[in-house]
Image (cartoon, rainbow, N blue to C red; front, top):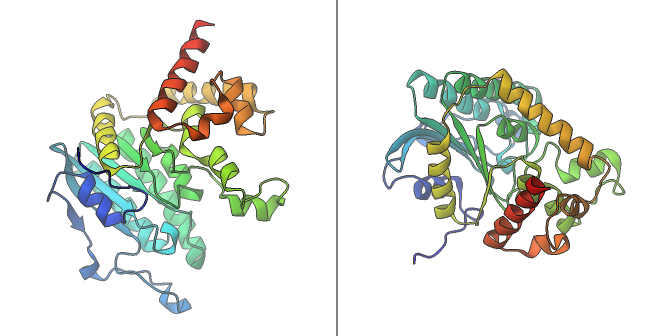
Length: 301
């Protein structure tokens, strides 16, 4: 048995090299092209020659896909003008060249404050390009397992995808814990309470709420297998009115059932999860088994 390689601890380039078929990744706009942010230098801020995101194409189990990986070690994977343009260009090229799918390795705290307006516009363009890709029949699969999670605009981008795969260590939300605490006070959300942070935004909770489609171990091989299955399972990438209405009904049910519950463990109990207080301690296999039991119990009720 091969040794597990942590997805969370790997860099963006390490993830790409190990996630896709060996030697198949071809990078667009590599660091040698020196395409950097036009804003950071003016603020005496450090720059990266790939602006914190690696884009290109590769084979995933022999299937040609387009892919991008955000580098969490550079400004927390935050999106600026060039960073966003590379993501937008990748999605548009995937449509033009009829890629089988787009696989996005999202790790981002949101928009880069150094170039906030340009970053906000860039994220909106990424969202539009992603939805255009789906409308053109190109499915988008997102992987979330990095230390910085998927927050802010990239959290919204993530939820626009066909399929979302997370690890327990991954996090997904609109606003980060520190942002919520700053805006509403520590009484509303204590960002130093790491257990609370992961109970609220972590992969297990997002899966139970229906925001993620699958939970896997913090292992690049596990993400690879899940991504292959997700690409193969998507039968229709296009957004339809029926799908949007079904999503809206799911959100309405969620608000009606759990809107008055403020502690995630209370939501888990209301869902029928066995031994809800110990859910954070379960390994992935045990968690998936418990979640399946809860679903079967609700369906049989």
